[in-house]
Each structure stands twice: as structure tokens, then as C-alpha cells.
Image 1 (spheres, rainbow, N blue to C red):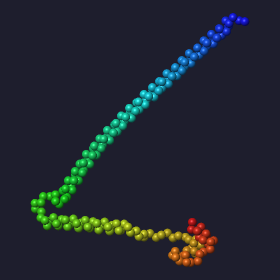
Image 2: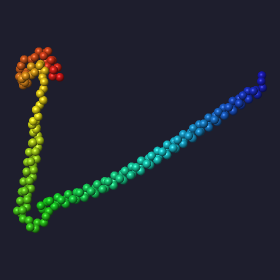
Image 3: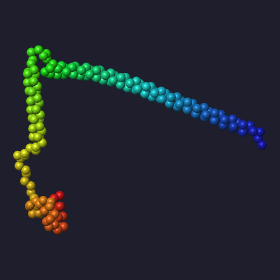
Image 4: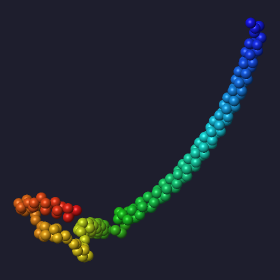
Length: 181
């Protein structure tokens, strides 16, 4: 039997090898982890920058839109005021009553009523004319009919006469349907 010195040396060498491999593995893992952390940091920084840019762009767009809306609102107010002034100037009661008599006011009301009635009548005539179909002066192109169709449809019958009349044999009906398609 041996004294065990060889076994101890082998076990010691194996332990050193395992320790070296574990150290190398941990170093590799640490490097990979550091690289991953750097990538995540870069990605997070990029996302932050993109979010900041988007926020600034949105803020700028909202500011421009608010400015446009304020300008449009002011323009609309000006236009509404101008329309109100024009309406007030057109009203017969808006002018001062000095020099105008009751007869003149009544005459102007009658004239306004007549104008409104004339406008309504003209509008209804125009609507009636639009409702009527326009007559076509163009001549319809001549159609060629097949011999079977021309022979079978020379005179049109009303639905009641068709029902009372003699039914065509099945073969002729199928031929007529096929020629119509």
C-alpha cells in the first residue's frame, strides 16, 4: 500500500484546476454582466432623450396650435361683430325715427313681405323644374335583336294578360332566358 502522497497531490491539482476555471468563469460572467449593464444604460439614456425630444415637440406643437386658435377666435369675433353691425344697419327700426312716418314703415314692410314671397315662389318653381327629368334630344342607338328574341317579344303584354295567356313550352323558355343573358 501507498502512503497516500500521490493521491493528495492529485486531489490538490484537481482543486487548483477547479479554482482556476471557476475564477476564469466568474471573470467572464462579470465582464458580460458589465457589458449588459452598459448596453442597458445606453438604451435607457436613448429612451430618455427620445422622450424628452417628443415632449418638447409636443409642447411646441401645442403652443403653435394654441396661437392659431387664439388668432382664429379673434378673427371670428371681429367677423361676428361686423355681421352684427351690418344687420343692425339693415334693420328699418335701427335708424332714428325722426323724419320717418308710419306709412313709410308700413310700405317698407309690405315690400319686404312681397320680396320674400317672390323668393319662395321662385325657389319652389326651381325645385319643381329640377324634379322633372330633362328630355333627351339625342337619338338612342339602334339595337340588334336575335331572331328568337325578335319573334318572341314583338308585342308586350301586361302581367294580367301574361298570366291568362298560354304558357310557352319549357324548351322555348330556357332558350329565351339564355338569349337574354
